[in-house]
Length: 59
Image (cartoon, rainbow, N blue to C red):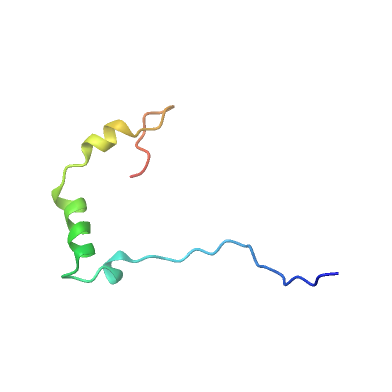
């Protein structure tokens, strides 16, 4: 009979702090800045809403 190793399948979540991970001067930092401050994303808000209450899918 095979002796299988126990696999821990309990979920693990890692906290992500974008201020510490997106280093200034990198493409990722510039893209984050553009998406957060410069580009108007209201078109997506109108398209992706909750069907029941019309609330935005994500804040």
